[in-house]
Image (cartoon, rainbow, N blue to C red; front, side, top):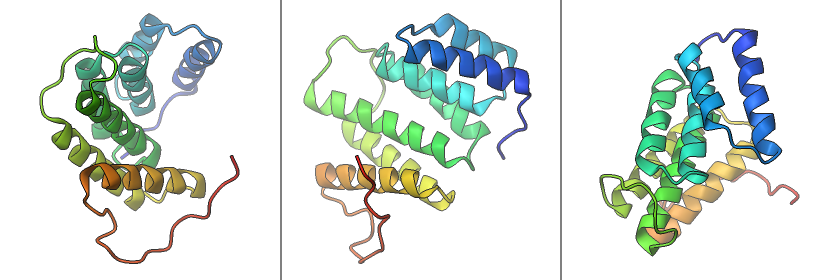
Length: 164
């Protein structure tokens, strides 16, 4: 389901992300990429993640991530990012950390359940070994918070630990 993206779109997103890595979070530039290539799931995913984690625009960011998932539902990284951001929002809601964020509908429990479902879907999308470990780590975090085992209580083979 992931679309074919022109090189120009990839280069534009890469430039926005490099600027971000250098300390300049330019949401207007990210929005321009999304406006010019509205079917570019990775650009929507980047914009959604940045809105949630850097600007604390939870509702706007999750909406953008939902669009990214709709466009890239076979992309393990997009699914992981959407799940990770939902876990981030659930944690902020549950702990009261980071006051001043944009409100979202739902409860922390609903956000955790939604994140869990996205992570499980990401597992089905054949992630690489590094992402597999990250997904399993996040599923374990949610399991510890909610008390619901993500692996059905069965013994499964986990990705090998990676050096940190």
